[in-house]
Length: 236
Image 1 (cartoon, rainbow, N blue to C red):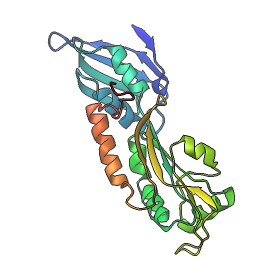
Image 2 (cartoon, rainbow, N blue to C red; image 1 turned 60 degrees about the vertical axis):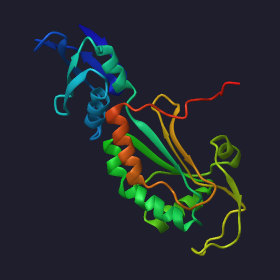
Image 3 (cartoon, one colour; image 1 turned 90 degrees about the vertical axis):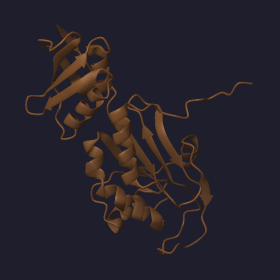
């Protein structure tokens, strides 16, 4: 039995081991494009979160994932689909070069990039600063690995749900605030596009800690926890 899957270009050449008892099956998926250090973690955690899966063993060297599951509770297609949807982009909106709290936040974020990578989370920080200010930010704040996006126009910022502030002169860093700029936000986005988690602020203070975000991602992956805030209309 062979199936072609899209997650990590998973080619599921499936081999079934003898069942230990009724309802239990063991299938080996060939994971052709498992090339990054975080891929085994992503594949294992996403497959293990499927109800009915009792064990997942991933071999980076052999590029395989061997899964034991109860076929009365799930299917090979469901396990494959879980891996297809693995991985979350994390978009961190920051105020810009003028913001000392942003400096602390992005330095903390950079120090945890390896932890996010292990969980299959790609990270980018974005502001409405110009390219020149973004380059100055990387140099002045010592951000050697974190990807910085720049030039976020304020109309786009509003479509992201961000708040916009007017400049109030020089900050404690000695850098002038722009005439207008976007306030902080943090979005964890599902691999298929919809928002999974969001935190939007009107001020620079009291931002989420990335250690808390990492712990939340662990819980989500382990328990297949659904996105909340799903109610868009109230009964009338």
